[in-house]
Image (tube, rainbow, N blue to C red; front, side, top):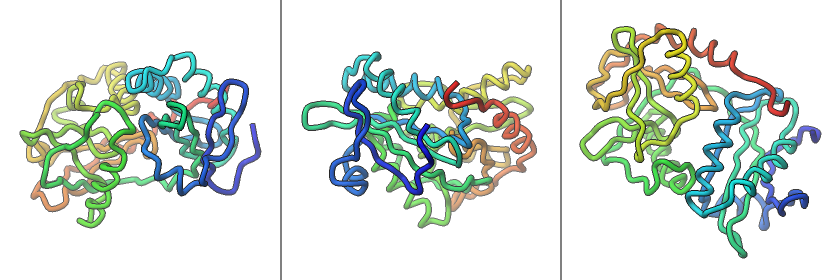
Length: 271
């Protein structure tokens, strides 16, 4: 593996066996380019969780969005992983973008921001406007605007609702909650991103003998319950406020214990 860089690097893949070079125009130009597909995960001192699931989600999305052969995506990922530093906290992002001669792959090696231990949710005044909810990438700019709106409202994360006001997920998280000892989640479907951390937690619950159920609640249906916003970067963050909604956040009785269990699932990035 290469020595740890001092800052983020945005790299363009030249193709199998040809390595990586800097994104044309530098990092600023790379950040402005529309991303067709993206996937990110946390790497801490060369260890990560559910890497195979992240890679498979990225591979499937590239095939769906631009008909990229799975073997080509696999070759890119295989050459991208050794580019990640062996020490420190990193939040790399795999990207598929439209290049001058067709779709091309990029790797963004980014330092990971500090982990948030809790989260405050904000409900936008309009329903979910994503164009491709089940693919991470096409709606990143829209989700960034929602996150800024949440910050302006004194919260951390926006909640995405269906047209009839049902919770789908957060702008960067999956939403889970507890009721009567059962772990609940919105059902899978074309309007929900297949969350990798969500999938891990639901499997952990089932393997532990904890009942799992699927519902489509309104925010007010979650009043007083322990609610989690989960993702690869932060793991489990219990909801401590529903900003401006009148919904009361319930006590986080289980979050710390389950987050510790989740962390124990980490394994080597490259075996």
